[in-house]
Length: 144
Image (cartoon, rainbow, N blue to C red; front, side):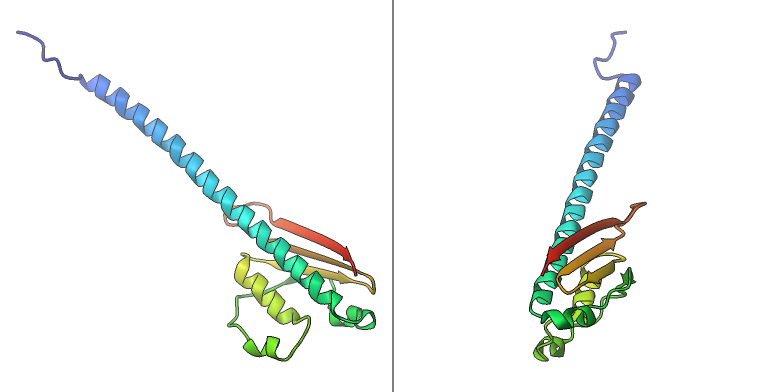
């Protein structure tokens, strides 16, 4: 009896195994790229928020800076609250509560630290990305 020219079960299983290995590798590379892009976006947002606070602090007279900027170590920023349109309408130059609210809405499990002196300001923001063992952190320091 002549042999059928189709694939054997072993050949089909080997081809299926190779396809599964290549697919798993491609998915891993894809998810790693998505994770890296998300981390870069978080870092960019943290730098933007720190720079924004530094620029706001430059508007405050030097004698008022130390009291206007509450320091005191890491402070958890809490949940993302509803926007307060009156905070900007009041003309509050620093609006620290609004600044912290923006951090809470932008970064996961975020904390902020502000160290202020009359002529220097250090802002640090850290957050815990999903599935990360260690928190990520951005620190900026500026002379005012």
